[in-house]
Image 1 (cartoon, rainbow, N blue to C red):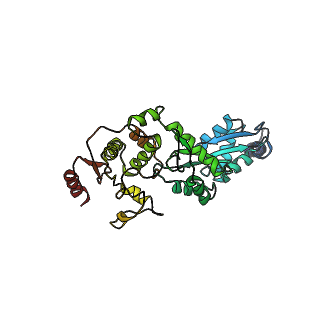
Image 2 (tube, one colour):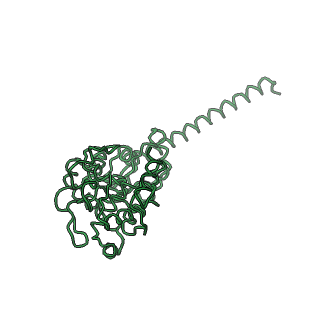
Image 3 (tube, one colour):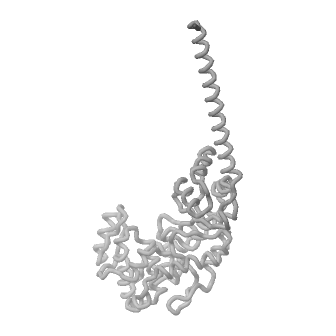
Length: 343
């Protein structure tokens, strides 16, 4: 009969053997997993099977990006892709835009492309009310070309044909929106993208509406640009439109500060009395009628207001601190509003 100590020794050896076997087993599993992960990341290049273009929307999470690339046939395993990005701490560094993935890329190559931002088209937002010069600078800031070249393209003589008339340039017709712009496009091609969107946003019966207002479509676009720069609240825009049309009908100067500001190279917070003496066709204090071109690129709300103004007897408005405008029919009422809101 074995002694108690011998039994303990045998049990100890058995535990040691079991622990060793477990360690070996875990090591084999870890090694196999490491080899699998390495192959999935650096070796497997079966996808995409052909050159594939993918648009990554702005604001996408990394999980959404991985799922999108998987759905488009660029990635075989989105889970591996997400793990790789997490290990490299780059899952918050993906650049939105449109990417072109050549056939047969590894997951590592795909990740590097979207983290470095190797897009062939980038997202650009053109805000409402930007001038052509501001649009040019915005595009240049997104590394899409030279601002001066864009400005010359937008403002050169000879614009587009609208309602049977030729516009002086493209001011007013570069529609504010968010675009996916190819990085190799010429300024003329980019201009066409923005102008085509303007044409899509015009009311379908724009010519008929303009005729009913006694105006041409370019006239109404110019009015829309004044509304864009003067109005802050969308609900005020049709009322501002009514003031402009009422003044035009009566032969009154429009007296729009924003039209004078358009003549300045840089933004002015305040229009001075000296500014009001500037001899420019854009000085709507000295000259009646509309300025010779739009003074900005109006958005949809301002275009709609210009083509469908409210029916009022208002001749004046003044901005209030809350972003809305106070309207008046007489100069006396207007002066009271100025005293209340601007003093």
